[in-house]
Amino acid sequence: MIENRLNSEMLYRELGSTGEQVSAIGLGGWHLSLKHVDEDLATRIVRTAIDRGITFMDNCWDYNDGASEVRMGKALRDGYRDKAFLMTKIDGRSKAEAAKQIDESLKRLQVEHVDLLQYHEVLRFEDPHRIFDEEGAHAAVLEAQKAGKIRYIGFTGHKDPYIHLHMLEVANQQGFKFDTVQMPLNVMDAHYRSFAKLVVPELVKQNIGILGMKSMANGILLRSNTVTPIECLHYALNLPTSVVITGMDSLEYLEQAFEAVRTFQPMTDAQVQALLTKTAEAGARGEFEPFKTSSIFDGTAQHPAWLGEEPQRLQQLMSAAG
Image (cartoon, rainbow, N blue to C red; front, top):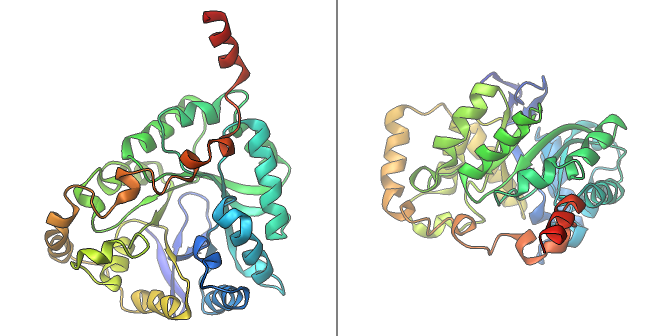
């Protein structure tokens, strides 16, 4: 992992094999439209983050019914877009739905292109096949990339590391290599269906940019009373992550992220083991990672229409079988 401190307050790392340098902390977009965050505060959070060196901006087509993208778009006016590495995600699995969502995201964000587009919530073993079907989302994403609407392509998911590995396998069968992969990377993950143990080594091997999320799981991990917020961020930063994306719905949480970077030093094996020992009992059953053990975090499970229609070819096969 090549890293440097071009900015005195922020650490920068290479994004896989893209050649891009990005901030080791990414600003989570979902939090920008929570009920207690007004538009003015959202703008101040984004612009203060960028002014102090955070470049990686996270968002998604479905966050708060599009409000998060709208707010980020407004915050990136007045020259801020040029200072940001902008990522958003889409839920569409069909070509038509993916194309529609890409254009809607660009309109909300008020940009001509995003730096990174990711397939959101790859949670089911059928998702890779739907995405890479000849009528699937990947066809639309490649067309958007060719048209200059997106630069890099990745995927996200929070359910099971074996689904991530299956997505990589299906992509490889199609002759495609992702630029980035996003997943939960936190002090509890090591103990239950671990992305760090199963997926991270494969991404390092392929030199794919590793995006960590849910370092505190929106505060749920902290309810275990085993670790502090800074310890959570340090653990995720210590993994071979390009970016650790964290939610910031206040300027205080933004300051916390900078404090974590300021105080971060590569951890010794003994320090890592001490953290994992403290969290072993709490993390053993996935209790503090409900995104793995329930559907509460699964927006596409609650809104299956976001995925789009199944491929016509499969529907015809079903009709013939009937």
